[in-house]
Image 1 (cartoon, rainbow, N blue to C red):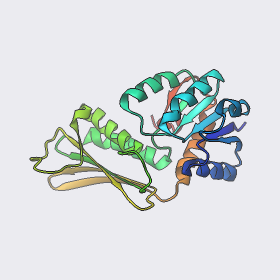
Image 2 (cartoon, one colour):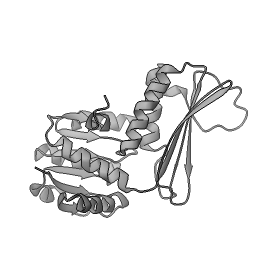
Image 3 (cartoon, rainbow, N blue to C red):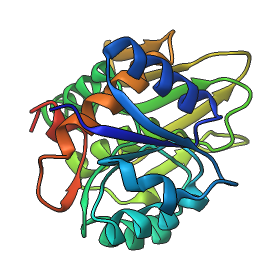
Image 4 (cartoon, rainbow, N blue to C red):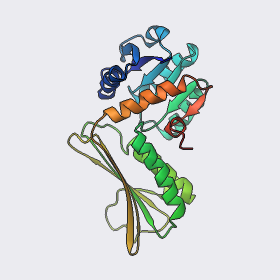
Length: 243
């Protein structure tokens, strides 16, 4: 049986895409709320909350989901590392899918990036480049952040290895650094490139999104999946069986 869905952040771009995609897929949306609406009251007729509102609202969404025993799908980005750690501990008290990107293609990119980082040695310099529309408020994107985490994990490096752009006389690039470059402009939905460059060859893994609907359809797929799971924090790798 298809879950009853509540969309939080319904007036935003992703909220509108979720509502449109749910209609196309024949899924039931029982409520569409935003910051000024009563989330606790609206959730009564839903099985799962999909939240694409603001990182500032995440705790309130989780509090409601836990109190009302509802599953939740979190798609907001921009949390600080400390805040995210606390929120993940809270999210584990209910069935929760938390992902920086819900695209099926991007999640395959995550898996391929892990494989490439594992196979290619430190003589392959790793760089991540992302580009989004001019309206995006946080940088780097949640997707780029996850790609960086994967590379750091496989290379056993810490966040101190990250280089957020480069300026001035930086000296020669070392093997123990990973570059991240965030571009903003126009109406770009989302583009991510993971580059492994060595002397004599370069491997690039690229994903380009042209329709925000890919994220909405992925989030709806996550919502259908998570309602039958025990309490805990999952990601799209779990939803897609890529682990």
